[in-house]
Length: 190
Image: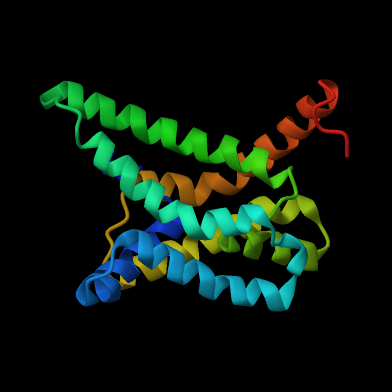
């Protein structure tokens, strides 16, 4: 999504705004911005619902920003220009949205912990008591992140807006589908 340059996911929009307005000025990388901010969100999750924390949480805090940095570095090695590059960028945006949705649907079902940002939406949904509300809660948290990111200097793109409105519904869809498929294939037994 960062390489496609049509806008990044809502949480990363917030993180990039924070990076541009604070962390870049003090010489820290985007990956470090994500790690520090995710750790601070983790404190909220620790207070609210520790059941969302696990190895997946640690991996999300430690790796997400740096994997994103690595992905952008590797994509910058692509030597395509003009119309082909534009088409590739659109494809990467669509692929990025689907990859995030499918990946989240998978890792939400493993119960090994989720990223602190993902945990916030799940905790709010649990407090409401209606799991079907997750899609709407996620749209709300995503729109808040986009707004804060914009205020901090990140310009949301089409991909950001698409993800703000469709990440929640796509996560809910893939989480449900993967759970059903996993049980049919005896991969998921809980």
